[in-house]
Image (cartoon, rainbow, N blue to C red; front, top):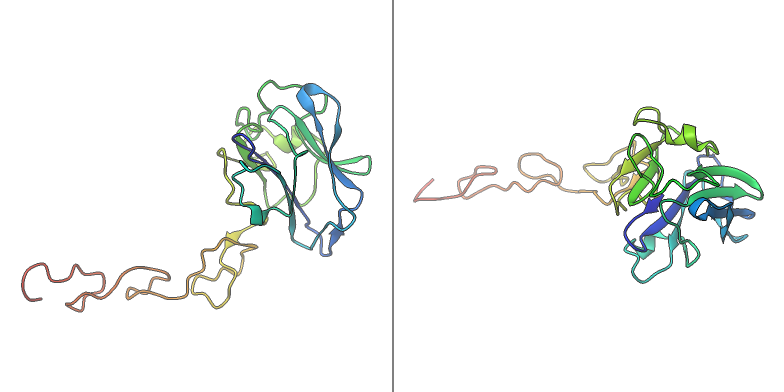
Length: 219
């Protein structure tokens, strides 16, 4: 969930199951300023999420700073603020929610002990949470321990496009992380003279790894 500056808005849905999930019949609704839910976006019959994958829906705007290649779809209708409740529905069944339908919190709702966290923040579901929660009070929690969410600063896009553990997923790289569930572009393939993967140390003229070279005269 991203509610950032201006048009930086996105919602990411994760599939924790061992099989693909069709999004046919699913929709995202919002309750504006304490109003009841109304339709905001309806997924197409061809939309699906592979096992362990995500679907990223972004607000369609030329001023949206979220990288376009991360978005699986974009829509002008995905326009919400921090004080608008946002719900994921399968038909008429509420699967997951951010905020409270029929309630206007002012600026935003508190999450994990952070005030107004649904406004100008990025919320990321903890990897230990493997299902939606229609009970926002329990989902939001009161501190970082009992909340289902991690609260990140405004305009944080680093975790968008995957869910889980970031890292290098190429097993030919020297910093391959077998526990990673999302490639973060950090793969390195060479070690420096100090044996550091992706390091920058080089051997100087005096044969010293990471040395300063020849400042005056001979080595």
